[in-house]
Amino acid sequence: MNAFTKKWRDLKHRRKFAKVGKGCTFLGRDLYVEGHVELGDYCRIREGVRIKVHNGAKLTIGNRCLLSWNCLIEVTESVEIRDHAGIGEFARVRDGAHLIYGTEAGWRYAPSFAEPIVIGEYAFIGSASFISHGVTIGKGAVVGAHAVVTKDIPEFEVWGGVPAKYIRHRTKDLPPHIAEHAEKLLKEQGIRKDRRTW
Image (tube, rainbow, N blue to C red; front, side):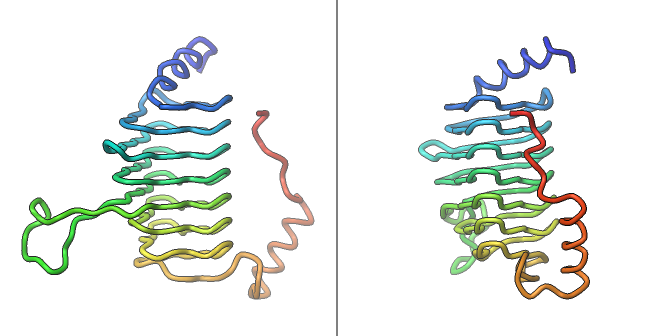
C-alpha cells in the first residue's frame, strides 16, 4: 500500500469512530463501524472488521489493541477491551442475547437482554471464538481458537473448547515439556520489545 492510499484510508476510517487515539492503523478498505466506538492510541484494525453498537451503548477499545481480520463485535449495552488485548480473526464478541428459557416463543418474539463484557489487558481471544454476554476475561488470559466462552476467565489462564473450560495457568504448575519449551524460547529470544515502531 502506497503512502497516499494509507493516508486516504486512515482519514476515511477515522471518521467512523466517536474518538480515535494517535497512531492507529487501518489495514484494508473494508471496515464497518456503526454507533459509539472509542479507540485508544496505536490500535491496529485489519480488513473486514464489523462493529455494531446499538443506540445508548458503548464500545471502548484501549491502547495498542488489535482487531484482526473479519472479527465481529456487537454491543447492546457495554463492551470494554482493555490495553494490549488482541481479538483474533473471525472472533465474535456479543453482549446481548435472546431469552430461550421459560418461553416457547421463537427467538424473534422472545425478550432480549444484555450484560457487559470486559476483555482484560494483554488478553488474547483466539481465532473464530465466541465471547458471550456478561463475561469478564482476565488480564493476560488466552482463549483458544473456536472456543465458546460463557463464564469468566481468571487472569493468566488458558481456556478452550465448547463450552470453554480451564486448560492450565500460563506460568504455574506447567508440565515439564511445556516449562522446558518456554525456558528454551525465553533464553534464546527473551521478551520482545514492541514490534511496532510507535
